[in-house]
Length: 156
Image 1: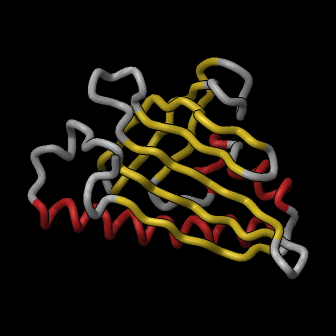
Image 2: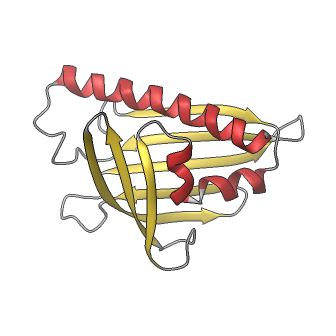
């Protein structure tokens, strides 16, 4: 179940194959190259990019930095890559990130990124509705910037 107002989807058209784009988004250590909030990741178990593998995602906003354990829940090459945050927490998982790739009519890829807050993480629970809306706005802007950067990297 999604927390009200804490879900967003963004899409970009990329002049590269779905396999190329998929390889980029499942290479989570590189995500820091494109995201204004993510600072990369390191794989902690399993085969990198495979379903069931785990990684520690590193994030930063201004001076604040934090890391989050994540588990890959879907890894369908050329189609879908998805992970959840803090799956081992009693109240988790908290957030699901999904990247869907599909061939488009121009011979490239339609990349869709989805952010879905399944349950409020402990750090967000004390926030007011206005503060949560502001956080959602930051995530939406970051998603747009991330997709533009992935597009530029894939097309270069």
